[in-house]
Each structure stands twice: as structure tokens, then as C-alpha cells.
Length: 157
Figure 1 (cartoon, helix red, strand yellow):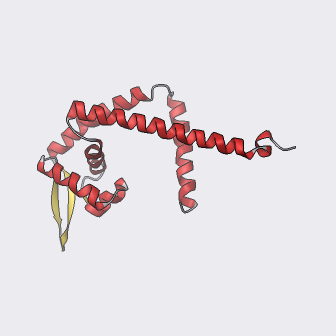
Figure 2 (tube, rainbow, N blue to C red; figure 1 turned 120 degrees about the vertical axis):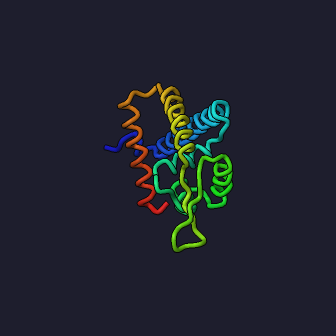
Figure 3 (cartoon, rainbow, N blue to C red; figure 1 turned 180 degrees about the horizontal axis):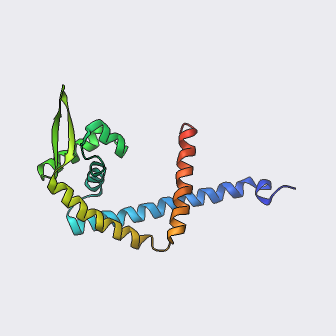
């Protein structure tokens, strides 16, 4: 015997479309809130926060191409952000021995301290924004999203 969904595949398709739109709307809303709070509280931007977050995971620093890869954005997008973070004394460029064209970008001590302050606030904000979900719910949804992402990679998307 066929399930009701198998008889009407357009129902499942429409529900998945609605799910995607809800996920997108929620994601954009949360992102807008984070952008506003970072601007108000720290006079910074989400892209700057993202660059510092990426660098915080690599103590020895990253080449610009590696940083772009971690962030999944173009080198051009990252270059301007890094330039401003250098100007603010939050990151430094360190020459790569044997490669005059390459440099590593890493957080300065001041950058580490500033990122730590921002990261604490960021976590508190997200905890509040996602407080509708229990820890178990969050873990389950996270695992489902990881599986979805893995499936997309396997499918060549």
C-alpha cells in the first residue's frame, strides 16, 4: 500500500520548499540581529568577526587563500577586511619563508583579546536567539543539517 506522500509527491515537494523558505528567513533574521549587535556593541561588522573567528582557530595563521577557503569567500572579499584589521592592530601579516609573494595572517595579542570579548557576547546572543530549542533539539537539528550538507557534497552540489 502506498503512503499518502507517495501518492501526492507535490505535497512533499511543497513542504520542503516551505521548510527551505522558513530556514532562510530564520537565518537572515538571526544574521541581521547579530550584525546589528556587533555594530552597536563593538563597532564592528559580521565579516570582521568571521575573519577573526577563523584566525582564532589557527594560531600559526593562514595564508590569504586558506583564509578565503575557510570562510568560503573570494580572496578579494577577505583582502579589504584583513587590511582594515591590520590598520586596527588586530591582525598582522607575517612573511612566509621561501615565498616572497605569500604572507600568513594571524591575530595579534590585542586581536585575540578583542575576539574573545566578541565571541562571548556572540555566544550569549545566539543562545538567547535560539532559546526555543532544547540542547537535545539543537543537537538533533545540527546533525540533520550536517547530514544534509554531506549529502550535497556527495552529490557534487
